[in-house]
Length: 383
Image 1 (cartoon, one colour):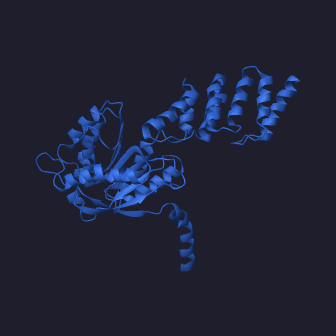
Image 2 (cartoon, helix red, strand yellow):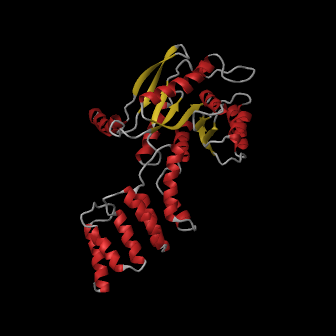
């Protein structure tokens, strides 16, 4: 029985072992004067996608925080809820207190902490950029002491990280005021996530709630701020809740068009559906430094919205985007035919439907469907 269970577990884990293998590397740091070991998880099919570049997520406390972060990144990217990313964990076992050290006067990184600060910002990221296909978008994650530490990068004039995932930070004196000042004045887009829990360490929780009250008042369009207070979570269990929440909120615009987006934006507002689609993908590239083709599901959401609202003029920009995104398929042909059909050009629509013969099928569109549409017009108008 034990053998059977073992075999079943192995079979279930095989896909994750295939795609989620972690490599270990050593960086000889001139800043630290020692070698440091890191864990790296590359995206699925990284070797095959030779022209693709990926955001980088740096995880402190890599001894225990790397696996849950890397797992969630892989899971979210699999379902296209977040971009594929290179996840890098720094092992800090026995060194985290030295790595996060700050002085007792200015409360800024000091001694080994100052060296570790430079190691991450200058050596680690440079090493990743040289060895792997990295995008400009970078995120850093920390827990308690390391969570406080990651905020020091925000105090620089040009922070090297764009996103900050703070899980129950053990805030240094003056950190709250410094953060409010830095995020209020930020002239570039920053994502800031903060989390605590109902059963978090009382002193930490109090300071975190105070920080949230201050950050919530910031009026800066360049700041995307999100906060979670998980009701029954402890200082350690909240990690499992905070990571997926942070990823989901940080990459909200990246995900496919949701039912909520469809109902509340595409159907209930005067916004142009085709412009909404174009703006969405332009924003993804601008914000996250990744360029992805427009998803078929998003094309279908816009198509359904046009049909529902009867805004037939929206088909013109849509079919142009479809031709660009999926050349050689029936997608653009179908949208163009619908455009001509609804604008009172049935003969032209019929011919466009017929032109789909020999093109690649996509979604629900195939040769039979397109020819039936052409035949229906021919029958109705006697062509």
